[in-house]
Length: 162
Image 1 (cartoon, rainbow, N blue to C red):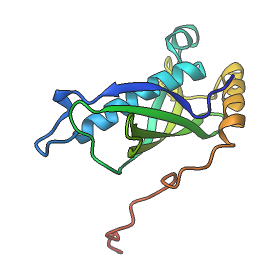
Image 2 (image 1 turned 60 degrees about the vertical axis):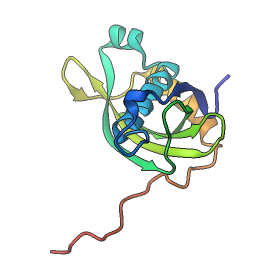
Image 3 (image 1 turned 135 degrees about the vertical axis):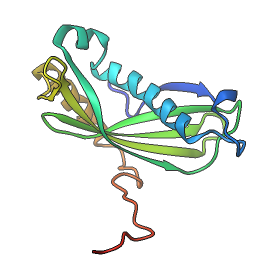
Image 4 (image 1 turned 30 degrees about the vertical axis):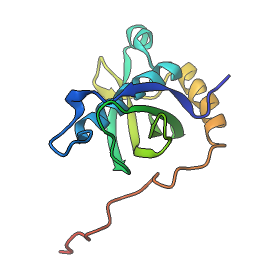
């Protein structure tokens, strides 16, 4: 059975994650999202056994974080992951970080990931079995609503025109 969305990451905001403003520091939002990504990728078949057997892995190509509401020391959080697209060499996923007890949205991350042949350090096509797994997960995840933060860009203040 395919989870939609994938929802297995849980953590608690650690004291060392707190910055001088008394809330979770920017770097630790990304750390928590990265840890959640590892679980999601294991679920997709992009795990250590895959890397060892095929020499294929993933590299982040683009990441966009949004911060919605602060988290403080000791607060529980969870991260859900949704596959929002893929092609022969890339996958795009979206994650939501929520307060695990109160349920409010704390942050989001959208990521474009490239599949890489580690022996050549070049972007490569997904092996057929992995492409099939992505297609199966995407067939279920595409039925989920697209998050309103997906595809956002920074628009204000506008960039200077030449």
